[in-house]
Image (cartoon, rainbow, N blue to C red; front, side):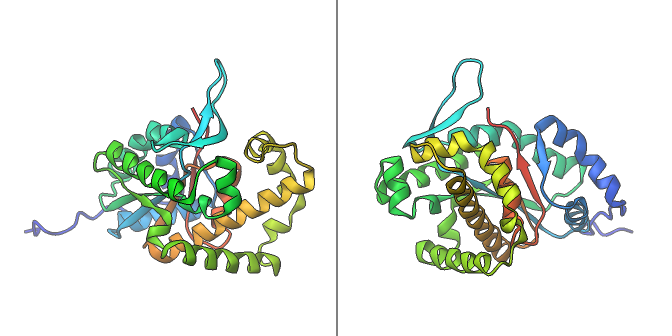
Length: 275
């Protein structure tokens, strides 16, 4: 007789079959994959074998934004709120479907979802001055944003501040410096690809010019893109060091999501398109 505590044995499926199960949800919810599909399939297979999985989402702080009639929302970066913000609206539009996909269709009961508010974006004086808040205000509002995610998630997620999970501001700055040194040593070919940096810069020119309050030369834009990529690479590295079997489900700008994987061995998905 089968023990009542025995785990249900799920049949092994080919990687292509696992991806096919995901495809309708990904298409409906506008979710993009930024890693080899084999890596995503391997993550799913581990969960189906009974290993515990972790989804990790980094959420940007609740920067001010506008939503002109008939147009997509866009950040203005003229202030900072303490709610879920524009990124949170996008996250909660799809996360129920993603969780159902994992739990019911992929038959993975053992997973959790961590949402980490990117408070490290307020760790420099220049960033704080651009937004018009003090370091204490930035931290306080990020904490409020994490609480808003937690309340809205109603038990389906756990939310907190990124730096709290990884040793605080000083640890972040040390890790960021180390990643910059690796980039300067030429370790990441993606950051040496001027064509790619230029394409991303052009795609997000309006966003960065809103942030910096000025028109920017191409070379300056490319450097901003490279610096942002290094930040995300640092975040990806730390996520992989802390969590077992992580999948990074990005709520950040689609053009940047792939940079989480520069120094991280984890599947990466992105929720594309803000409301």
